[in-house]
Image (cartoon, rainbow, N blue to C red):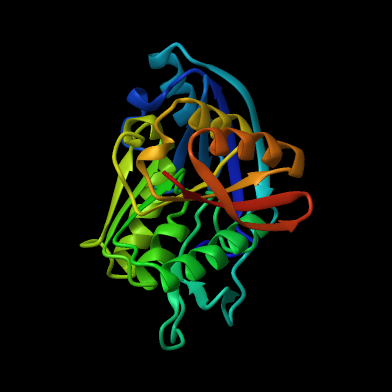
Length: 268
C-alpha cells in the first residue's frame, strides 16, 4: 500500500489509450477507464512517456494534476480498520492481528471507510449467518473488499465483476494476498452479463443510474437476495418500487445520510 505522503500524478486523457501503453515506467500505478476517458496514475511526472503514448493513439490530454495519496484515498490506520465483524489491515502490515484481512486499495474505491461499504458488510454478515449462502456476486467489486469479506464469512463460490481494468487488477491482488483465489473469481466485464445466472446473494454498491438499469432489465429475479447501496433515500424509494415489481420484498434498511443500504428477498 502506498504511503499517505506519496505524490500521485494523474493524467486525464480523452479516449481509450489502453492499447498504446508500451513498457510503462516503474512509477506507473495503473490505468482507470471510464466512459470516453482514460485516467493514468503515476508517482512521478511522466510527460515524455505520455507524449509518446498520445502520439501513437490519437487520444488527447485533457489535463494533468497532482495530489497526495492521503487526499485521494483514506489510509487504513496502522492498527487496522474494523468493519462489522471484520478487521482490515494494510497489505504490507508487519504483524497483522489473527484473522485480519489484508487490503491494498491502490487508487480504487473500497478501503472500508465509506458508510456504504460498512452497511453492506453488516448486512452481508447477517444474511450469511442466518441463511445458507453458497454463491455470491459482487457487482462493481472495486478493490474486492466485499468479495474478500464474503469469503472470510465462509461463502465458497464468489464472482467479483468490474468494468474498470485497474479495479480488476487491484481486486485480484487483494484476493490473492488473502489466500482466496480458489474461491473468488475476479472478472473484467459488464455486469449485465451475469444477471441471468442465479446467485444466493448479490451485492451492488453502485451509482443510482447503474442500479436503476439493473432493476429494470427484468432479470434480477433469478437471484434470491440483493443488497444494494450507494444511493440517496429518494433514489432508494425508486429502486424499491422496481424490486417489488420484480417479486421482491424489502427486508432490511439502513441509512447513514445521505446514503441508504437496502436488502431485498425474492418472494416468488
